[in-house]
Length: 124
Length: 111
Image 1 (cartoon, rainbow over the protein chains, first blue to last red):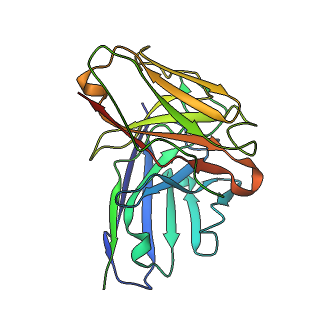
Image 2 (cartoon, chains in turn brown, cyan; image 1 turned 90 degrees about the vertical axis):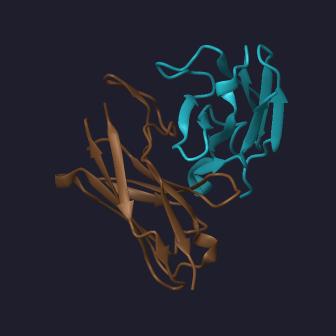
Image 3 (tube, rainbow over the protein chains, first blue to last red; image 1 turned 180 degrees about the vertical axis):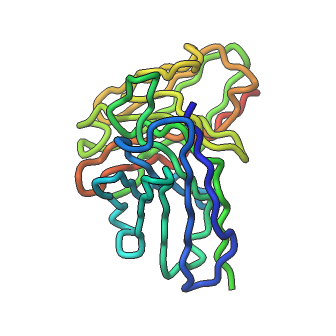
C-alpha cells in the first residue's frame, strides 16, 4: 500500500521560500506523476503542479514562483515556492496523480493517495 | 481560468439522497471525462471517491456515484449517513494551458 509522508517548515516570513518534501513508500515511484495541492483557510483546493522523472507542469498562476524536483533514488519529491506572502498560507498536500488498484491505474487526475498535509503559515 | 462552481452547502437527513453539482465550461468538464471527486473531513487528507466521472475506487461505498451532463458533473450520495458529513471537492482536467481546476468545495450537513 503506497503511503506518502510529507514534511517542511510550517512558519515563514513574507518573501521567504516555502520548502516541502514528500516521501513515497510501499510502491512504485517511477512512472507516476506526483502532485502538490494546497487549501487556503476557508477556501477550496488549488492544484500547484505535478512532476515525474521526465518533467513537470505547474499552475500558470504560480508558475513564476514554483519549482518541483524529484529524487528517484530516495523516492521523494519536493516543492519550493519562493517570495511567499500571506496569500500562500494554506495546508499543503502531496499526492499521486493516479489511482491504482494493483497494477491497473487510472488515466490521470485521480489524486490518491495523499500525504497527511502540512500547514504553512506566512506571517511577519 | 475560474474554479469550477459548486454549491457552498447542501444538507439532507439520514437515509435520504443528495446531489452536489460541479459546473464548468466546454474547456474543462464539458470536454474531458477526467472529473474526480474528493471527500474531505476536517483535519484529514482528502479521499478520492469518484474518478473519471463515474468510477469508484476499491473500498468506496456504492452509495457514492458520479455522472456528467454537458458542462456539469454531479456527485450523488444515497442513503445518507452521519459519517458522510464532510466537504466535497470536484476536480477536472482543463486542457494543456490551465491543466487542473478544482471546485470551491461543498459542505454536506447530515441533519
